Length: 213
Image 1 (tube, rainbow, N blue to C red):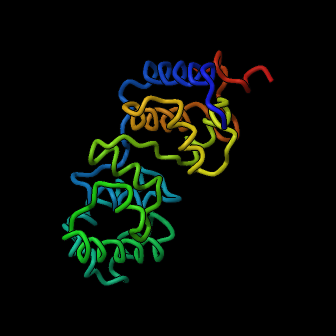
Image 2: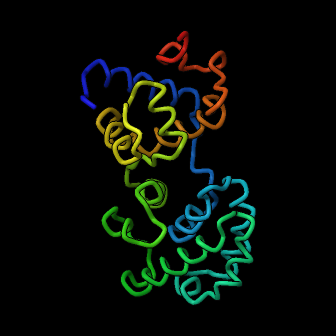
């Protein structure tokens, strides 16, 4: 998608209104360190953050570090995360990921996209969540909300998350990437729903190409 000055101005108006509407936007997952955020983000796939936050206290008490997760018995881990859905796949990814953390990163979560993405269960979206929230490295996690809203608001024509991320990165100042992502997610959850968006309640209605169509 070609980045023009009017499009960039449009995007920054959206970012400004989102900041006014959601001044307290934040990562909804509960965590105390980068490893906990990594595990919680893996669990959040096809699951609500509320459900993940109910599961993680007991999980983190049982497995306090990467070495503990790496040595976990799959059946025991599956039982603890069962209610998050897709528990077998998530269990495999958590154990495999933590084994690599132990073997290649001394048990610590790396702070670069290049080191995070090769880890089992970690894609660019998860890596951006970890980088932006645990390490203060700006990133735009393109989940279903960010992707949907970006298309509706005319910020991208892409459907591939990596291309959407690239388009947004060209429109929004780098220092705002992480908070822009949080605010888009808040807006997607509260107002701009997938099936029945609440356009009459939307503070962005005046900027949204779909309103009035």
